[in-house]
Image 1 (tube, rainbow, N blue to C red):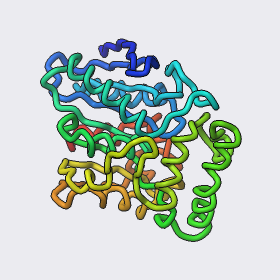
Image 2 (tube, one colour):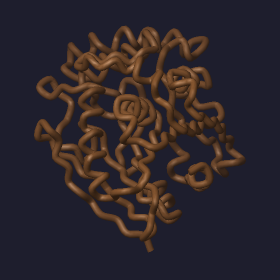
Image 3 (tube, rainbow, N blue to C red):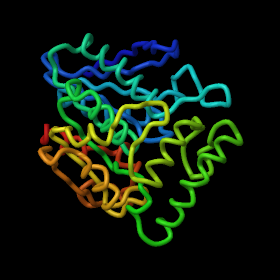
Image 4 (tube, helix red, strand yellow):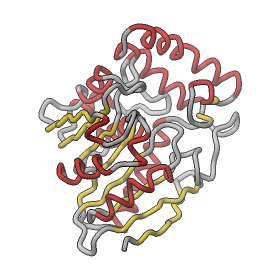
Length: 281
């Protein structure tokens, strides 16, 4: 019988969020921090988190700033970018160490969560023991071919002026998610157009930090993913130190036992992913 608990978190600027904790075995040696995809609520991963906790891991899920249980929402008055989200994670990790001391900390990042998780690990390598990416990669437009490449490049140029005009970006125009903050879209556009991570509200050099990031990394992709290509996956993990121990696994419909397996639906029937993660850890 698994046990869950919610804990309120107050960030440095006064914003409030709520973390959901799925407790593992009594002597759990590993705590997994599950980071969502862009525009996806943390509750989307409840089945996934519950399954991992039944394997003995402590699991923490949390909404991004501006989503779900976060006390703030992107607007003309409320702006933030990747760096603020990374700062939020720094607060979370300090609390995780209090809640689950002496356990190894492993980020499980889905899509955007894998990118932000990588950035956090690059800046705070002593906070993270291992990194797991699930259908994650850089959004650099050169990671695609054909019409997707052209469409993403055009979008990269339009995100910022459109966000400035409205005061935020309404993600319904790209097919999923809610509102995103202006600076967030500036940071996203930078990655789309240049392939680099340069935060508009931070002087920290993440690209250099990546080169020093020496971690064990598991990257799980799904075959024929509409949102992440093999090239975009490689464009992210190739940034890590050459000394990183990286394992790549691609999953198909038959393995996952999910008809029309895609970027998102694995989280609702995650047995194959849970087994893969458990075996790897």
